[in-house]
Length: 314
Image 1 (cartoon, rainbow, N blue to C red):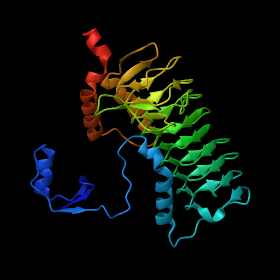
Image 2: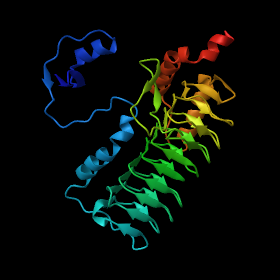
Image 3: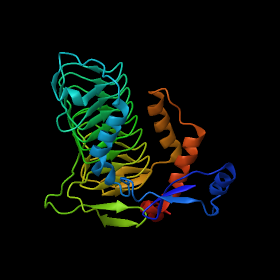
Image 4: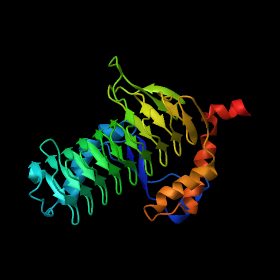
């Protein structure tokens, strides 16, 4: 069975035999399909849709997760607006923070922490064990995945699990994958100086395409890192396991397993990339297992043609 929306596949339920066929990249015989055109859905078709729809997604998740439940008590040390739109899971810790939930809900996950002096404006959601550091300024709609650590200024952004932006610096209209680390005083531009439409790298098209967006920031793949004082231009795409450092603005598209910055790139060899990933994951009692390595090796292989310097060095 399959669900379609506007003629495109949304989800399919396969039996074991069909799944084996799919794994061998063979065609599956026709499935019984059902159209969902009458349902109120929003689809993530482009990278920027993740931030564009995030406010709505936070509200929907908030309604689902908090239905018929009571929030853990909020400490009297905090300054609160819209307390009815704030929900704290058991074990969450918030002291001497300012939270304004009048523009959207604020969800604080299990064992998460908002430190002293943080300023939070909803819509905002943070997963379990996530941390907002002292003096941070968070503008909605922003989502922090589990175990993320965030400081500085963040606006309309999504950080997936286990990623860190622990220091001062601006991150706006951006999406950061898992196991990323943003160095201190890193800043990204989310608005061009001439206020024109932002173009963004598109992998299927193999070129930059128009987004229709005036605000568009940094999109960074899993396991990528950047050093202190890194600057990212408006509408920058960084692949998987890239490591960016140095002064100046690097290019707006940085392929997977790139090592370097504005002065040029070399290839981040997979053995070294695995060592870095293992070191970061070890801090969260996680391991880089065989499947992780196979996936990353496949990404390395598939992204080789974007690393133009390898051709020059051949």
